[in-house]
Length: 283
Image (cartoon, rainbow, N blue to C red; front, side, top):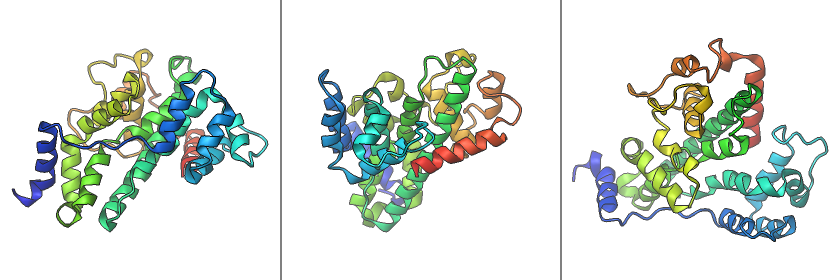
């Protein structure tokens, strides 16, 4: 087995044998999702679940106090934060805030790679929210919700999770950025779809990793039919997190379809500030 292809070959072999272990949804996020399926679930029930996860609790309080939710008074406790977020939104936002917990490598090189992933997905998620708001302000995005756009951005590259897990598990052989990058290009989209299916996500999000690199070139005729796949890919372009691909849609093509205006949308002062505020909220 040639060293440059070792990680690729291992994953390819495990996929063919249906033996590749996919990561589970973070425990607290899964418990929150299960609880919200109960029609009798209330905020107190969710608070009891989330309070055992200090990292998730802190992120939800930070989110509740941000411009994202437009709160005027400061939420001092988890219960106050959940009250501000609202029962209907907690499930989606808890999932979005917890996704990063999937990445807990021990190897220094894999940790660095994981940190880059977290930074990039936060940028994509923040930009996805800004794009969704822009569409809604134009009366186009009535089928879209900024919470779901946020979650879509956070899971757009989740296919990296099983790759990093193996790289960390066999770090003597695979803790190498070039190996990880090459394998991610080959399997990232497929593994991302597999992970989201494993987590029982809805179809509108399961497709996001598949279209992350290229966009829906043949399916996006104009802005009216835009979905979260398009938003996340455009967000990756605007934030510089899209890998070059000759078959991928470009920013100019999104402008031609009137998804965003062809007048320096991403450089507008108000857009820049909104993006920075959203990114700070996720940091």
